[in-house]
Structures are given as C-alpha cells and as structure tokens.
Image (tube, rainbow, N blue to C red):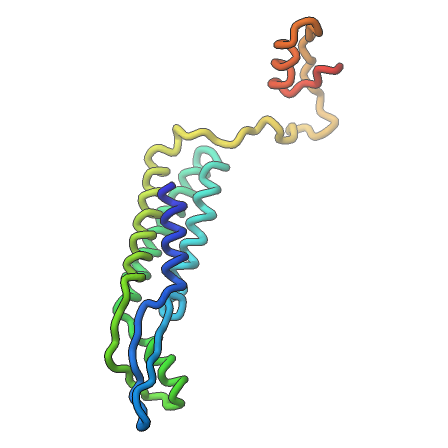
Length: 185
C-alpha cells in the first residue's frame, strides 16, 4: 500500500502548479504558472517505474525480488530528491515567461511556490519505504505460483502418472484439481 499511495501522490503532484510568478512587460505584469512536469519530469517518470516495480516484486523470486525491490527503493529516493531539487527552481518559470513575452532575458518577479513539490517528496519517501520493506522482508512474501508454467521438456515431455481418483468421494475430485490433474480421466 505504501508504494501504491506513494506513486499516486507523486503522479498527482507532478500535474499540479508548483510555482507562480509574473513577467514584467511595458504594458503591465503577465502572470505565469508552471506545473511539476514543467519543472522536472523525473518524479513522475520514477513514480511510474516504482509502480511497475511494485507489481513486479510479487512476480519474481529470490535474487530477482531483491533486484526489483532495490529498483523500487531507488525510484522512491530519486523521486524525493528530484522533487526537492525542483522546489526552488525557477528556470521553467523564466522560460515560460520568455516564451510568452518573446524576449529571451525576461525575468520573473513575485515568485511563490506551492506545497505540491513536497507532496511529491512525500510520495517518493513512501516509495522508498516500500522498497526498503521489500528488501528486508520480501523473502518471506508469497510469489506467483509456477503451477501452470510449461515443463522443461515441452509439450512432449513425459508426465507424472495421475493418482487414481475415487468418483464416489467428491473431496478426491477436488484434490485432483488442486494437483492440476484432469479428474474426468
């Protein structure tokens, strides 16, 4: 749950307004705003990577689980660091003001920052915590079953003999289904 909430927070925050400012013109001030994805696309991208790693951590076993859990933790740390670095960054705001005004050296005044970068940092911290939990305790978690995987010999490989099923005992039919056998044989 930590990872899912962390990814959702980081993705939500990247689409919100991170900073506001005004570009000075001869005719007056031109208000400008930039979203998190305008400032830096890194938190949103790493949140998607973290979400994919969160799903994959339950699909792999042993060394693969450690690698995916490490990727989950690193994506959380990267999300938090990139969002914190983007908090005070006004380059995207200056660039947007320069585009609107048509002058490359346009400066931005009265810059204010919202709380959304810190929401993205919190999402990154939750992703990091999920990755660390998966690294510490992941070996005890269940993995996807290999029951329906192909046999190493392929379709023509010899199969184990099916146990005799007593048709008068329904529980035997259910047990044969649990073993992957066809009880109608």
